[in-house]
View 1 (cartoon, one colour):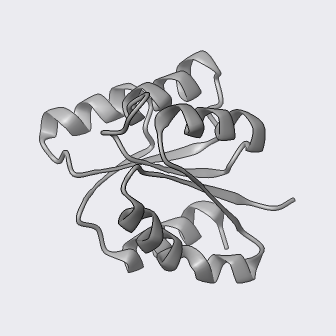
View 2 (cartoon, one colour):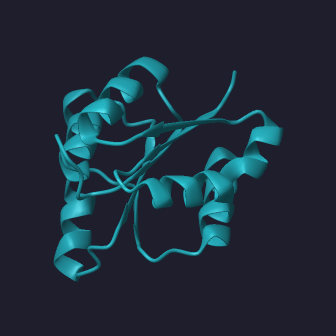
View 3 (cartoon, helix red, strand yellow):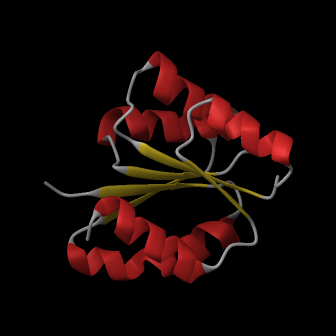
Length: 125
């Protein structure tokens, strides 16, 4: 079974940086998927069922917190590991991310190596 990572961000440069950080995982058979807004992310999550999702908070159409809440609470897809990856680094923001079901909360700017290492750990590669 192919493992999948979904990267969700409306900022093209972040998508590129994340894809570059995770491209070595493609050699391990991991499929990288991308979405540019919350609605698109939700559709991909429902159909592709990724193992891991890197989710930005501030996005058009639907914010990342709402996406996370729908996935974890309404759809009960608790086996999908969601990492909120956002510029919003206040304690209040982190608490909100945990409340909606995020498994981990990372702030931008992030270290690409940390993203790769965390992905390897979560996917057990």
